[in-house]
Image (cartoon, rainbow, N blue to C red; front, side):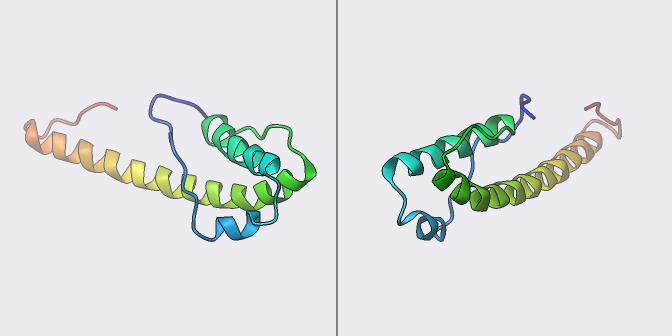
Length: 95
């Protein structure tokens, strides 16, 4: 999943703290570290039961946001190729 132009960030929405309010600090840290690892590599590290329950919720959001990012990236890439072709006399540029 990792490549040069891979997604390097993720969003924590304001409803996420509601799911973590009763968690221990250690479990919360596990979830945040797992989100970083999952965003970077696509792999889910070993988690405690408490952290795994919350991460499952967060994973759905991360997957949805990644799909949205991939669609945006493809659209911007196509627009860039089209613009470059217009700028350089109708020549298509290679990806």
